[in-house]
Amino acid sequence: MRPTFMGLETTKRGLMVQQKALDIIANNVTNISTKGYTRQRLDTVTVQVYGNDRFTASSIPLAGQGVDMKGVAQIRDSFLDSKFRQEYGDVGYYDQKAAMLDEIQAAISDPEVDGTGIKNALAVLSQAISDFSENPQEETHANIVMNAFMGLTQILNEYDTKLKGVMENQKNDLSIAIDDINTKFEQLTQLNETIAHEIFLNTDYDGVTYGPNDLLDQRNVILDELSRYGEVNVTNRSDGTVQVKFNGKVVVDGQNNNYWNDTIKLGEDGTTMTWTSDGKKIALPTGALRSFSEVITGDSSLNKGIPYYQHKLDAMASKMAELFNKVIPDTYQAGDPKVPDTYKKLLQGDEDGVVTAGNISISDIWAKDFSYLIEKNNPNGLLDNENILDMKKLLTQDNEFGGFSGNFSEFVTHVTTTLGTDISSNTARMKASVATAQSVDTDRMSQSGVSLNEEGINMMAYNKAYQALGRLMTTMDEQLDILINNVGLVGR
Figure 1 (cartoon, rainbow, N blue to C red):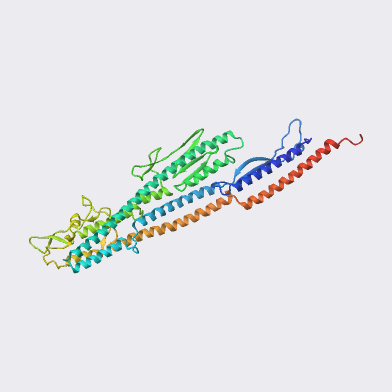
Figure 2 (figure 1 turned 180 degrees about the horizontal axis):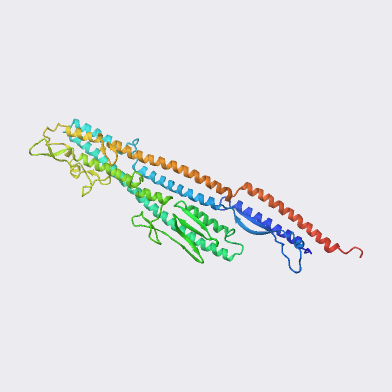
């Protein structure tokens, strides 16, 4: 026999379900701009009426008991999450490298328009030597040459200082990045523990389909941000927790109330990255950490980082000292007064004689006496300019600079062009990776993001159902009124 008030109960459940569905729509719309929010959906299931006992042989009297709420689910695709994080690692690599290459370019670019670059200084020096060759006995022209050399060495010093500043900035940024990564590892561990605890206490959560959605959103945001630094792989567990691998190493895990995470340790050199748990070096397949490592340590034609460009400037400084310190004779051989015995030291480096872009300068003896360049004991007389002309030729002759052959000006062009090519190539790859990541994210947001159009359609559908159920409740009430107040009164 059908229960008397079953219709009212069925209608009441329907009203509650439609009302809760409208609540979820309202929650979706109000969180449309919330970072990391995942669109939610109310899952429903028809009330089961099957089964019998010794009192009930048929399920027909109990049929039609309506709908019940199963849970509030997130509409999310784990495959698209994984794909986005993979692509976002490439974005992080190229984006971070672009920023660092721009800093290198700002440090050693040769601004010919401003007249402050190395090539301009070389042109000024060439003109000063040319003027001096016409008046090799004039102290005024000798002083101009000395100042031109001084200007050139100071520019090299400045470029070297800027590159060292870029190096320190990148090491500091790497340290900040590692602190951020370690913080995210700890946050994921805390969320794992909290989510597992919530699922254990709340019977509405099953750990797979349903869970504490706000905490799950927080965890997904952290995982997305973490993927910028490296390769992130996530494995979902039945208790709602996740196992996280970072660059192939399990860094966040835990089950049975034992939750833990690894951390990254930065070496004293500011560049070496190892795992705290086993001391092994971190693999760097992609991400911002890889770009940090390449730019801070890169010193080859295949991996051009800050050291690469530092050594290029060092090669130029060393070659300048080598050539110009053997061009102006200081003393001549006793047996042949026209054959130089020693040469005047025009440029110097450190105390050990090592010349780099950072320490090159005019020699102390030249700095004290600007007329030092004048050959007062020239056997051919003070007006002989042959050695001065040889000095000028050094600026235009081809030299070997560690794999590059050309004069000083061409070498500067080679270095700046190489940097420009690297920047252009990296920018093109970054644009491609960003486009791919955006495409995947668009696909992901089409599922997990809030659509006002879709929410509006659902709102109208649930509202119509709510109105219909309200009318049905009135109809059920009228039936009960007839049953209770009118049935059996005829004939009294």
